[in-house]
Amino acid sequence: MTVTEKPALTVDGVVVKYGRVTVLDDVTFQAGRGVLMGVVGPNGAGKSTLFDVIAGLLPVSSGRIEALGMSNDGPASIAYVPQREKVNWRFPVTVLDVVTLGRAGRPRWIGRSGSGDRELARLCLERVDMWRHRSDLLTELSGGQRQRVFVARALAQEADLLLLDEAFSGVDVGAQEGLVGVLRTLRDEGRTVLMATHDLTNLAERFDQVLCINSHVCACGPPTVAFTPEVLEELYGAHGVDFTGDGVGHRGHPD
Image (cartoon, rainbow, N blue to C red; front, side, top):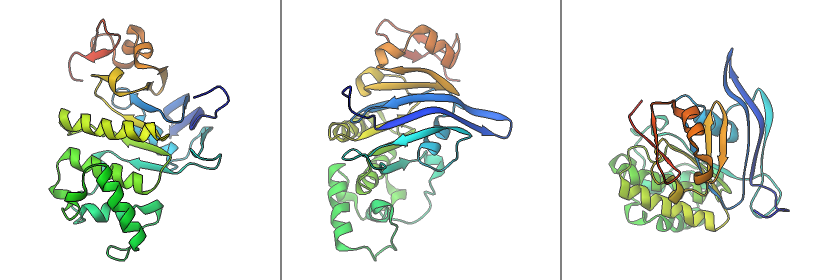
């Protein structure tokens, strides 16, 4: 991001409260255009809540969120891939249906979509190497394949800003690397991608920036800079993290 270029996303002093409980406390950070950012923190740190408020699904108690389009200064199109637990996997829908129904945020009845939307869905599924599975039911796919389908759906929405909540959950290492490759391509096209993850391995290789959050922002910047021993202890406590010489922390034991 150049000095004169506006960031793709600005979160300024955001506070979110559930009753008397403060879930997000004065959260402030920026994400540049064409950036792949990892969002890390312990369970209950507010990562999903942060994504909900960026996507406009939850109101903020105070503060502001500003997202700009990549090609102009109008509002950005935001695509949100939620956690697996929030998706009804029992619904009998095909891969092509999932992508086509999300076209530009304009839901259509299955089988009634225009030819233009179906052509775009085909192109998006080809980009994530899932076109050959277009007639498969979502329930028949592996975890990695499902995540690719949801990324294709986000592409079909022509989103400027992509939010992926725990996209690595239930996905094997090989599929994770394939998904990261797709996200890097989107980044290189100028899109901004935020992905919440519990996996701290290979963060420096996978992400340009990391946002470390535990209700408040503990650090935000390149992984090798943001992950100091102090930040890791603030996130996970003194006994949950081994700090290695490569500048990136690794979880020593599960919570």
